[in-house]
Image (cartoon, rainbow, N blue to C red):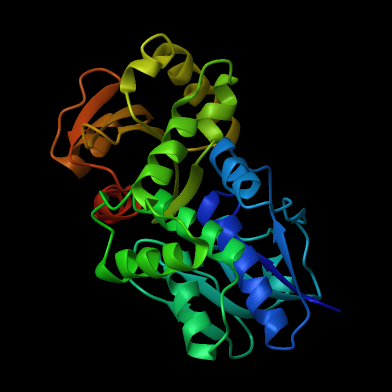
Length: 307
């Protein structure tokens, strides 16, 4: 029986690429491992995999009775639904420590960096395993994505160091140019169903017993949403009711202006506004300098919901 490696629900580039890289590493260490995903990949991740000639990992959502290595999350809400019935043997993550628990000791790689793939690079270094050119390429792209081409406040020296070393292995002369190519793919939203946009990078969070869903769309120009905002809000209202959520928030992030317009559908907009020191009179508010959901949004919301 193989070891399965998977990232979080509604997978992004970091969760997919880290699962592929960790599975390769484990196989090199003599452990049969298979990379998996919990859902469909987004356009950016598809671009990355095609760029470096990878097939999509297999889709697998049930792991009861099987060995599992989880990447890019330790939150129960984002893990497979039956994760507590699996044997979790390892985690690699760059987020806050979540509520996942295990019955046996596990291999834990958790670091305060901008991307899980930066930590995976450290895993390869620790075990002395050479990173193939194609694996280095997808890891590099995931770091560029998660750090918003080094603009995010979550970006660290470890992230930039990893990109420099991975670019050399992958033969990428201009990583930033590749990053911009990726973000142009993200910005091509025309023709995409509204629900697919809202859910493209969406996560549910348990905030002191309250369910809050937060999505994020990163583009190079917010004008692509000018004729879509009301449709986005309408779908967010539906999503809120469907999931019994207190709030559904959507960050429309402009990576060039380095800020985000936050769309808000909530039972208590005043509470949401308090998290950012803002008054939300309508259904949106501009958050200057906010690029990271992980560092600049979730912690402040958790504080007000905990109060």
